[in-house]
Image (cartoon, rainbow, N blue to C red; front, side):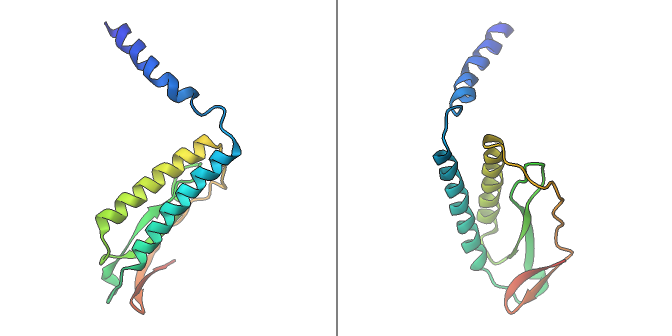
Length: 129
């Protein structure tokens, strides 16, 4: 019975293993457009926020480097829809990780440092490094 279940799992995964082997450069551009569109949505959501004091600000790790870890950090006001922002960032990070593996993307593997502090400047949250 265990062998049957294992065999069934393998059969279910086979289409996923071979579905993308013949993709062309055009498909990579489509994947990149999707990532860029999602990033634009995230940037627009962050832009809707405002702050009065430093405690109104927070940050999230953003992106997925091929070597691991984020590319950067998004600084935002807690006045935005935080659940929606976290959801969009999590989706973006996952999609970028898949993109990196799918298209064999490389990076410098440098560690992106999180902000040491956050400040509210002219109603907008900014990172301090």
